[in-house]
Length: 187
Image (cartoon, rainbow, N blue to C red; front, side, top):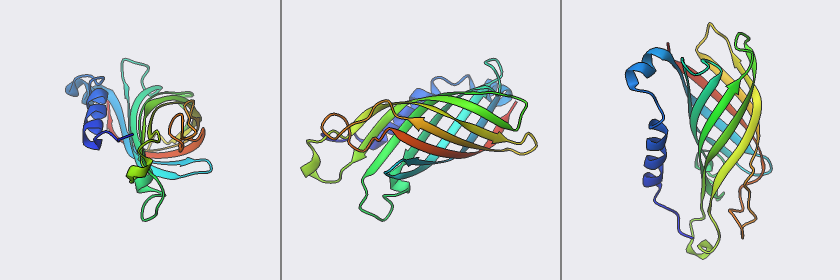
């Protein structure tokens, strides 16, 4: 199974995400935008690192309901300078953060995305190398109202997994993630 062209896929996912954003001047004046780094560990498999962004709009449960996009890859983790399989995760998410006035806030999140593995050899072309991702997640966010830094610790479960013959064989069910983000726009 051949991999789709990565630049076209990334362009499509970014364009899809941007289509849900409000007009830019509204966004800059009435929203919270957090951008940061994501470190993800599939239990018993790879470390994956990447970027993450999430926003909350003033008119949609501000600072409680967030919509986000993340990219995490073993290319920036375990597969860096090793022979580990290079795999990429593109995620869209919606999150709900409880206890709005507290520094330590429980959260729930639903991730929907796309997974692709690059096996790097034509002898593996017959193996499935991509999948839709669907994963609920629970966790905690620490956010000090006086600082622009937020830390999220999450634990998730991939509802779509594979065994290498039916679905990609490197999607394991359990994962943990840590996101450290900076609030770059607020109201």
